[in-house]
Image (tube, rainbow, N blue to C red; front, side):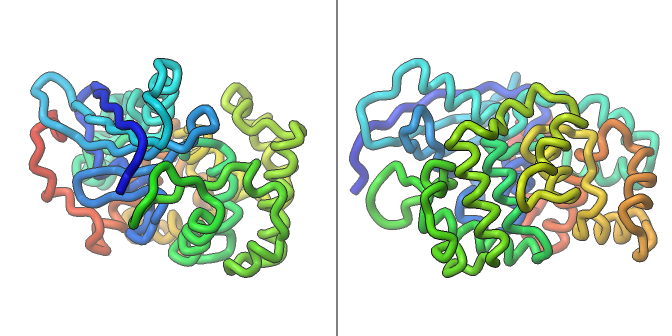
Length: 323
């Protein structure tokens, strides 16, 4: 039985918007346990002002705007205005609610293959991880592994060390904070399936943040060069990870990670990029989509998920999706 408080509010989003496309772009695989999706509702545990809260988001019909109904549960007393504002801010950023994709759609019309892709997934907004730290740990976990295996590792990490906002069965675990991981023995992460080097990189990054030696959130205000240099200076962060964090952690929508194997495969399947293409070839090819390479990356991910039967564009029956 759940204890604590419940609060509700709404967020208005300009058309077109589809919560399902956006959440699938964020979660990437159906077994992602941190970013829950039951077909109509997005469920996620966040830490707001050091307090875990369980957030559920559902899209409702409205002729003028896409309307998101938000429910927040937590163990304490009612949320104050500042906490509500912070939850709204995190959701706005992580679900890309303020992104204006009109320029992307206009560019896509000039290229038939891209236009088909864009039309198929109209309403997707480019998501970000709630924190740059979470983006970095995702990158470290998924390096040199399939995304499927990487997300299994992240699920285990969250189940073992992540916060919860309620009690009972099927309680979602949020993503671990740096403070929670900083004091852990690397062997504990090894027991979850992380390699020795990845376990060390995760704990070292957590310790640097807790000690104040690294401030990842400040990279939002840095240019690409500064942000990438800072990221590459971290243990366990290479070129792919840095570009992945620029896109998925810092919202740099012009960045298409050139070393991303999944992106290369999707470019080969959809755009006939040679199967032998390397980093420079991918970067050169993606310049045609500047400054929207990251958006193409996200659309290709959705296309692959649709091919696997996880995403069904025709299944959404809400008129708010197409505006």
